[in-house]
Length: 114
Length: 111
Image (cartoon, rainbow over all chains, first blue to last red; front, top):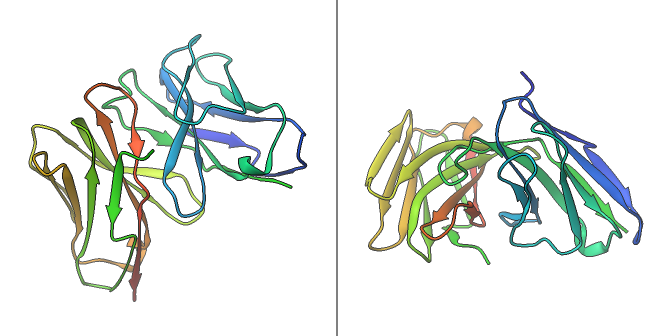
């Protein structure tokens, strides 16, 4: 039982390049989330998916797209990376009630955009 | 914008001492959660307290919630070096269903 896994762990991009961050969970959770964490700050929600086939914007969605490929997988895409997107990205999942169910986090992807 | 704000931003104590962290928030909430983040790792859920609860315990953790003051505190008793981490409060507002995280308190427990 791996919980929430993320790939890659580290990535360096040049401005304008694109990439997709992958996330998978094996806990049969309905809800999945993408957050970013900037140095010394808390997490900010980028996008979330309350169930398979649905996605919604969070607090900071600009510059990102997401895909809920199936119940297990939720990917985050940067179409044209910018230095302001340098951050640590965390994927999380939870049960059917995002407001009360515990969120389980992946280990994070450290992204640097030059 | 962040719903929750932790205080202090950083705290350094000796092993065996108690550590108290505070969280203030702006809007009415359904519940408040505390998470821990070890350096370079993802967040781990510690405890959830509902808006109709005033105090909750889990092992060496004690959480209080004062909805009239829109504040919560996390007390770690008899701290250990392994408690060194950042601690975040996260709230779910009444009008929404998403967690909003505060900026965190960085706790260092010296052996």
